Image 1: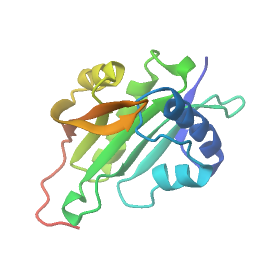
Image 2: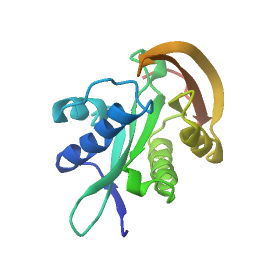
Image 3: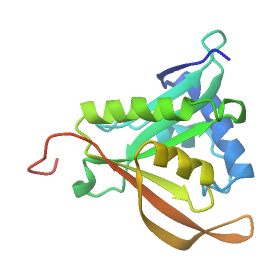
Image 4: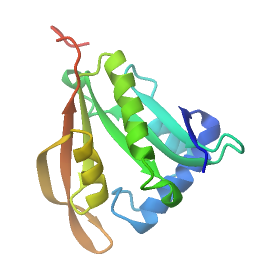
Amino acid sequence: MNLEIVDMTEMHLAGAAKIFNHYVATSTATFHTAPLSIKEMTDEILCNQSGCAALALIDPENSTVHGYGALMPFKGRCAYAYTREISVFLSPEATSRGWGERIIHRLEEFATKNGIHCLIAVICEENDSSQKLFTRLNYTCCGSLKEVGFKFARWLGIQYWQKPLDIPEKNDAK
């Protein structure tokens, strides 16, 4: 499979929604319990704020989307201006091939160039593959919340995985 990582545009949103909605229906990788529309995907991952980004993993021959990654605001408070939540979703056929790592590296490079100090991944406590991925990329599990989500008739917890980025110190908030 010959794939490439590109900046996400509106033409990639339907493919990204199809991938995301697969995980909505089949896993605890997301705590959404109903499929997202294209408009909801747009609101979720195409953020116009400074330091936000979305990438698509596509087949360049036919533009089929095989995954995506995004940097999104972490909370809505001013003091979090230099922090972003990072998220990656891959189609089942694109997993375990290093694409998740490549997307995360590209998002980290973007974040560093744009003055982001810290990235946070929010991972379900039973999602071993994401925990292993973020461990390999030097993220640290820095906290957990037990039984905060209810999906598939059971209570689920989350873990916060953090990676500070190497940027100059900020003296004031944006």
